[in-house]
Image (cartoon, rainbow, N blue to C red; front, side, top):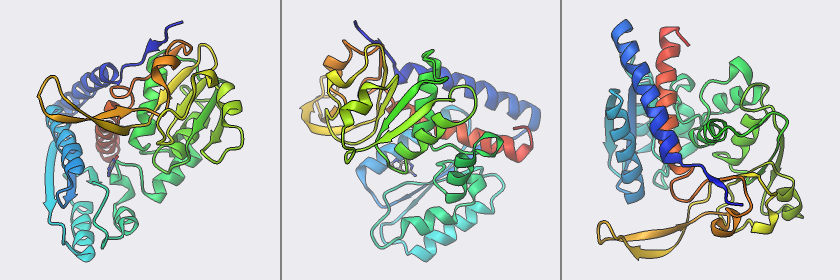
Length: 302
Ligand code: GUN
């Protein structure tokens, strides 16, 4: 069997067209566009690259985009002051503080200072609680798990009553995706197990999964024989296992590997995400969706 490839790039493009249509419609009817501020502290190359992609995507959708770059030695107090400024700015509907922050800054303190109604990352404890309660209460789902749900649903995979096994218990992916798939409602209603690297018999749990979501950060952790034939396999792992020269640019680039042995797993699974090009492209897309959602809440149309 060869699995159907779930291409995050294609799903991303499909959603971006939908979002652009909605942004244009709201602009025409209400005269406003979503406003997103990206706060970047220091010059971490990976963070610069992520933030640049976020800015470009926001601009392509016609958002108001504010880039607020701050030096590495900004004080915690000054960064809190900046967050407060954007909390009070009515033209800003989403605030994103790029992580990681320098060591002298307590990132929890900064994230908790963001107005939960502008927390488009979905990291604030209020939004974590809202997701846990579910239903109408849930406001901003964290972007990577929200993107995973979109990939599953838009691929036509049945989630109703499905055995979902999540490998990984991080606050950014494992715990929230488990909660999302557990919700009452379409695209969820699953029976969820959360396993992790300390689980006694990981193979046993993976073998039961109709939908296997792996976010452990361990290359090739999941062996092909652990996959139920026909299962949907979502690989969230992005592990740098070496470097190579890009054929396109001639520059050195990282060799990336997922948490699942892709080449063998694709012969057993029914659906599978590649690494890269699977879950990765969805995160920024869902950030845009959350920012638009925030504007719709602000206008009372969500
Ligand atoms: N750093 C890496 N990924 C993310 C993300 O999704 N949000 C924020 N704020 N920082 C990040």
